[in-house]
Image (cartoon, rainbow, N blue to C red; front, side):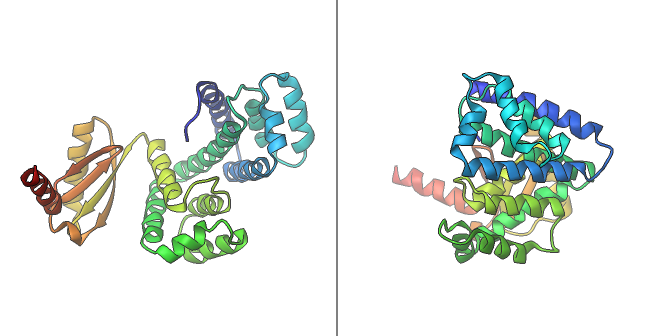
Length: 275
């Protein structure tokens, strides 16, 4: 998600209000409800261009935008959700679409905070990553989930059949929303972004590791320790076995690639010889 300066400031203010509300919630189920309601608002604003323009119109009086919001949602969403949305619409956003992006980000943050407080953030992050790998490895499934002409409820049912009873409730809600409202993003890329958000929630970088063979616990610990030392921050590992590497590791962190695989070294040698 790329936001312009004004939208970044607006989102930061809304996130602060969101966390204040979540911190003050006595009901442990409150964040789940708040996240679900914010996702519902994302769906409505995605379908109603005139409404999102009206709520994001920076030249209008913020009090007028708040009045419009309350007229639409008062009594239909919880007071917590309404408070967050008031903070959103009274701020200045660069573009109407970025306001919707912001509400979506707030919904995701709310659910990840819930997972964090339930001690399940690691689980959610891992499930999102693994599901992305499964779908990426099944081209017909990926096509079915991203087909813009396909029935939305059919796609949601398809993904539910894949994850129901097998993943944490937060994972399921996030995945269902991604399939229901992709907003121009592919499901595999969306799942990767969600896994990265979960890692960022723990202030860690994500290292995507491909290994020629399965790594044992001691090797994983050493790799994590080494990468943490190199990058001077905690690093979360996502590892998949790729026999085509022949040996060694291929590690990607952000835009940086560390290629210690046999296949990578051979490819580099061939490039050198060709030069």
